[in-house]
Length: 401
Image 1 (cartoon, rainbow, N blue to C red):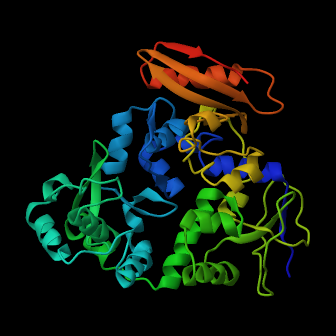
Image 2: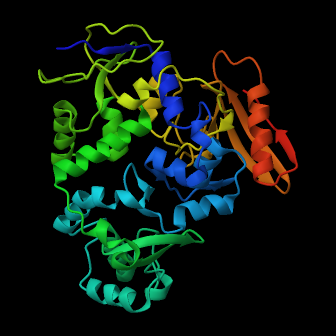
C-alpha cells in the first residue's frame, strides 16, 4: 500500500470545522444558498425550539441572519426536499443523484403503509390543481393516531418518494406539493445515472461536507444500505468518489480494508509528513490541500440535528461529547433537557443548553458544562447572540450543572 496521510485527531477536527462552516470566513460567504451547497444536505425536523432545526443550522454558521432570508434560500426554487441522512433540504442540482432511491421506492411500492389504488387520482389532482397541500386533497389523517394516514396522504407521500411530485415549500410545517415536471428543470429530470455513478457522486458530496470521515460516517450521511452500501464501498476503494484514505490518530481502526486501497499523495501544508500506516478514514483532497485551517471559530448554539453533530458516534469521536436527543425521553428521566443544544466555542463542544422562551426572555432552563469547562463565558456569548436573533431582550439561566 502507498503511504497514507497521517492526521492527528485535532487536525481532523479543525478540517471538519472548516468544511462545516465554523472556522474561518469561508463558511459565511454567499449566505444561506452557498451554505446549503457546501453542506450538501440540511436536515428537517418537526421540533421547534427557538426556531426550526433547518433555520438553526443556517443561524449557527451565519449568525443573526433574517429567518425569512433563510427560508427563501431553501424554498426559492433552487432546492428540494428528499431523503438523504433523513428528510433534508437538498440543492436542486442534486436531483439526479437520488434516482437510485426513487427507483428503490418504485420497486418496493411500500412506505410505512400499503400504497392505495387511488394514487393515480391523487396525481391527477396535483396535475390539475397543484401546488397543493394534503388539506387540498382530502386531509392527512383518518382520525386515529398520528400514523393513521388517509389514503390521500399515503398516496402523495409515495408520489414524493418516487419523484412524481416535489415538496416545493412548507407552510405552517405542511408540505406543499407540485409536479416534478413543473418544478425540476428538464435537463435534471432527463439526466440518468447508474446506481453506481449516483452513489459515488453522493458519497463525494458527503466527503466534501464532512472533510474527514469514516466509512460509517459516509453511510450515515447518505443512509445507503444493502446493495447500495456495497456500491459505496466499491466507489471508495476504486477511487470513484475522489476521496483519499487517511489515518486519524485515536480514531478506531477501519473494520475492513482491501488490497486495492490507494492514496493520491495529496499533501497538507503545515502538517506532519506522510508515513505508511493503515487508513481508518477518508478525506476530501481539497480539504487536505487547503492547508492548516485558520481564522475565527464560531461560538454558537447547535441544533442536535446539525450535520456537525447529527451522528452520535461521530460526535463522540470528534468532540468527546456523548449526546442524545431527549425530546422523546420521559421528562423525569432527562439528564440535559428536552432539546439540549450543544454549545460550540473555540472549536470544542463546551456545554449543553436546554433553551426555552418566555415573552421577551430567552431562558436556559439548564446549562450542563462539559468536563474541563471552567467558565460560563462561551455560554453567555452564545445565548446573547441567540437572543438577538429571536428578538429577545433578556437572557436568564435557571440552572447550571
